[in-house]
Image (cartoon, rainbow, N blue to C red):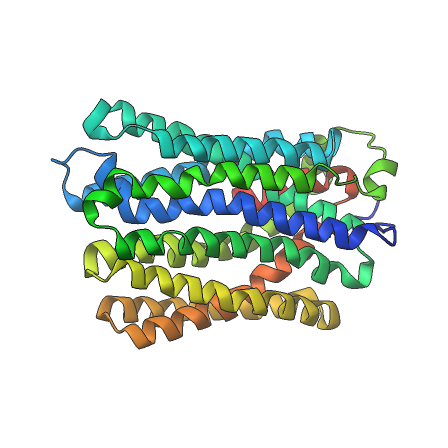
Length: 377
């Protein structure tokens, strides 16, 4: 079996174009994915579950709908991964774009529990399932495109822009809610204001489609010839790599705690202002936009493992003082620890994993192995 780290044979013109396409597509698609998590933390518990439900239970149910997408993502990886290795990275990127856009727009059109009863949360979960299936193939395909168009000595730098785009999309999804939560009265927010960020996904899909339609498949993918189906390759020769990726991918728990769980806890339990907590996330994500490319440069210079491990351990440790500050309602420390934990420490690991994980798999099974490892973890 060929070595998992293969030369990508980039052309002179395509690496930057591939990185830009991956950045833009990831930013726009993960805007769609993240806007749901923000809405779930702020309003969905009130709109899609019975008024008789205890507040704490309603919050858990809303958070459960967020988790549905993560439950179906391993299934999506089994579907999207082989498609990316057989039919092409671009095929999956376009497919996931439209799946994500349509399901996100649909959430903004859903009737609430007061209007249709139990049908409302059922439809909500169905939309979230489609989002999860889409997300399972997006990053693996975008990262593979960037890596395979990149020079070997710049792989971490080139692939980090996919995660930079994801971070920007998350920032945008959070920021778009701030004016609605800050300036709209609750009646307007809960009747129509919460829907607008979801409807904006129509613009998101059109923009990303215009950018991605001109993307070329990497030369390494065009020239690769697989003797066995991608899933067979992964399970026969690369099981250990999938396990390594799955374990390392657990660092993403830090991001979920920061962007969704702590937001719900702060606003629903501690009683902190919605708009100010959203601003905490915006600032931390803004810091990350600078930290991600800087960390990628360090990785290309000093190696993947030292930078990744520093970020994973550091962000995990910083979670405790951050949640302590949220519990105490201490705004200066919330902003400070949030920026250090998510903006700096987590970004060290977040910027490195695309190249770190993708280099463990050969071109002929890269999307499959990368998707399975990251979605199981």
